[in-house]
Image (cartoon, rainbow, N blue to C red; front, top):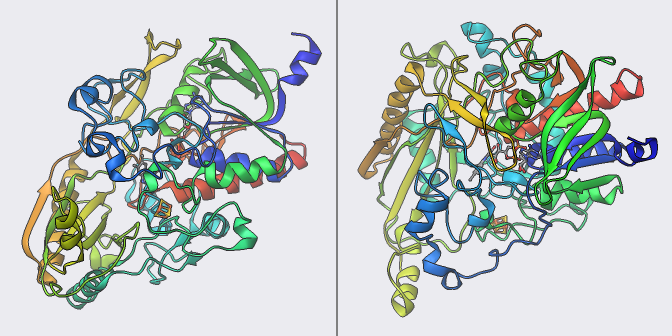
Length: 568
Ligand SMILES: Cc1cc2nc3c(=O)[nH]c(=O)nc-3n(C[C@H](O)[C@H](O)[C@H](O)COP(=O)(O)OP(=O)(O)OC[C@H]3O[C@@H](n4cnc5c(N)ncnc54)[C@H](O)[C@@H]3O)c2cc1C
Ligand code: SF4
């Protein structure tokens, strides 16, 4: 390659993937002055390009339902749980017919390839981790110890929450530390009653407004005209024209673009990170253009791999060289192993009496959250299982959303007070097991020539026992609040279904048992950083994305210092 050609293909930093963590990495690198190339395998999406965002229900075909035949042909894995693929969001979801993967054990790998990744469709719940999570593996002798503690990440939670805009209520709980919150979406009258009744019987179970990345307050200094206040339309997964919830396309990428340091290349499937054994570092990455089939190599001083937990592990496993025959930085043999998710498909529902003559107006994008309350100290110890579970739920007027009623009848129904229904879903922690894994089948390739990803992971004894308690405790809480017609369910979901996959390139103290160090740097390849869910050493019970963002900002800051010192 001619020198001038190589110069054109060389950047200070490359970020692989433009989802929640990749967008964050790109913004932080650009703000620090680095010419940054973002390589995204999916199509370009700019803020505002949300095709269904302003459509009314009657403008969507088939009452927003996707025909059975179409699901069978294209979304047979994505829609296994039968709730997720609709007319208003299917353009954000990969077609299984285009993006195949294999399963030894069923694995629901839910995703969308486009600029913004799953930051466009996420539920936006943000809860900090605490030392209960960071210390658990060590205390219980499970897998390996986290190389960081809460004090290491705390300032970075402050930093990202301030930019992201997380609404929430301070509760002083040690299991989900308070953060830099915007005003919460208040509980409605029935949810507030539920909070108070549960607290009377179970003082350690706290029903708090869900903490979500929706701007309840606009701050001109932080949001600089790029984002607006949430209108409580509750249509977030279509994309928000107000930029009121945090996504890469509404928040991090526009800020990165304003610096003049960002280049985004869509349709760029990263096939491998190239290792240079003479420097002991990565020299760059190879891509295949998804539209033209052209193969190109880009070069950079630092690489952030943020292709999501599974995407990142696939890239690293495919980056084979004489020095790393089993994948880049895989001296430990742990790459692709220890895959985790939260498990759900369990919860309760019922009627909440006492509010038949009360009424509230409008919508809100979140209900309540009940953080973990088991195994957080000696008092809450359970002998049957390790770790815990949390709940997301809400209480709403049944008449607010009547089914199969139209015209005048619909209007009259909406404006009438009536019964309230409660529903809540339990999210359980899953332990990291070496046996739970994903790997590449090099004998079978997809249409772009990438080896097919295969999953072999399942819930085990600890998870199954935890589920029983999760349901029992949920029923107890509804009973304590006087709910009627209580129904519980325990429909075992596959790993992946909660869309919180984690752990395929875990952080740890040393290269013989983990892939990444305490700065999310590959132990054996210091200029490659992994700050998506692949880095997680355990799964906690909290929704994980705000932790990926905090770890990303922290890792970029560290890489920056290393570059200034000339180490990287
Ligand atoms: C419906 C739904 C609800 C959710 N709710 C919540 C919630 O409430 N709270 C929470 O914390 N999390 C939630 N999540 C999970 C959250 O979306 C993910 O944790 C988060 O998006 C992960 O960020 P990421 O950067 O690792 O990956 P992603 O956001 O998935 O982005 C990865 C990007 O990398 C690209 N990519 C992959 N491979 C390659 C390659 N080889 N070359 C180039 N590009 C590549 C992908 O196309 C994608 O754009 C939810 C997810 C969904 C779908
Ligand atoms: S609820 Fe708020 S964030 Fe969600 S789509 Fe509506 S305005 Fe946007």
